[in-house]
Every structure is written in structure tokens, then in C-alpha cells.
Image 1 (cartoon, rainbow, N blue to C red):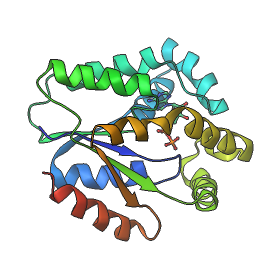
Image 2 (cartoon, helix red, strand yellow):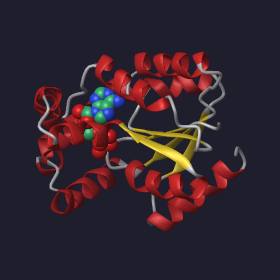
Image 3 (cartoon, rainbow, N blue to C red):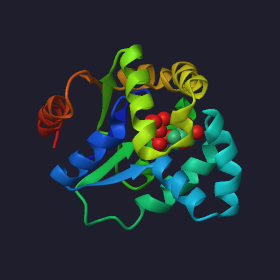
Image 4 (cartoon, rainbow, N blue to C red):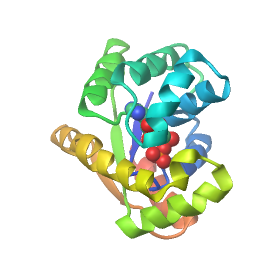
Length: 191
Ligand code: ADP
């Protein structure tokens, strides 16, 4: 199995690119954001609790997403590997993911980090709000908070991965096809 993290700020295109990359390389796409939204849509107790946190643009507790991921990574032998999208989002989640994979004879093989300028992120998220109906995309103050939370809690993962030789920056500006092409080229060297 070859396991990738797709990494970047909110609005960097992780979700869009992940769906296309998962199909191209036969990877299991695991998005904690999608899993959390599915809990909310199903009206579960967990979903109700998490929706308050998500609507403010804060991170849900590490244990919640770690448990969700742990459930998914067993019994997925049909795939060439995993593509983790929006997870890990803290250094603690990263260390836990490494441990989960190591315990199963796997590892994180590469972190693909999308670089996108701040103004472009805000523009994309506001544009997406109209299509997705996501409450956390509608309010500019929540968007700014998500970017602040990313800079404070998520960005340190770059150092963590860089120290382990896993960090691979990818230019996330341009069209969806341009960015897809760059990611495919980077991943083809690893798979
Ligand atoms: P985006 O990349 O646009 O921020 P996501 O769908 O990845 O969107 O995440 C939406 C929200 O779900 C986040 O703002 C956060 O509240 C919550 N969330 C998703 N993944 C995680 C995670 N790994 N750890 C903590 N919170 C998470």
C-alpha cells in the first residue's frame, strides 16, 4: 500500500483533487470533513455535537477523527493505498496516524502540500458556498477563522513531515486540470 496525505489550507482544492486522484490511482479517499458532514446529515448525537464546532471553523477533538479513521483503515485491501484528505490536522493526529499505519505494517509515504495564496483561498471558499451550501463557507469571519486555525494548529505538520523526508510542496494555483497534472506527476514517481 502507498499512502498519501493531501495537505493544504481550507479552499486549497484538497477535496476536488482527492476525488480525481483516488480514481486515477485506485486509492481509498478518506476525508474526515466528509465523514463529519455525513454524521450531521444522519442526525447522530456525534453529528449534533460536532456541527456546533464546525460552524465556528474550529477543529473537532483529535479523538473523534482518529477513531473515525481507525474504523476505515482496516479491511481495505482492495485498494493500492489511502489518500488522507483533511486529516491529519494537528501534529498529535499525525503522530497517531503514523502509529496506526505502523501497527499495520504501513507508513505515510508522502505529504502532497498544496500552496495557494490567501486571497485566492477566500475567493474559492466564497464561490463554493453557493454550490455546496456549507454553512462554514458562507460567513467571511468563519472563513478567516478556519485559515487562522490552519496556520496555528495544522501548518506545524509541515515541519513534522519535512523532518521525516515526506514533505512535497505542489503549486496549488491555476486551473483544476493544471493542479491535477502536477499532482499526478508527483505521485507517479512514488507509486
Ligand atoms: P476544508 O478543507 O474546506 O476546511 P473539511 O471538509 O476538510 O474542509 O473540514 C470541515 C470542518 O470539519 C473543519 O473546519 C473542522 O471543523 C472539521 N474537521 C475536518 N477534519 C478534521 C480533523 N482532521 N480534525 C479536526 N477537525 C476536522
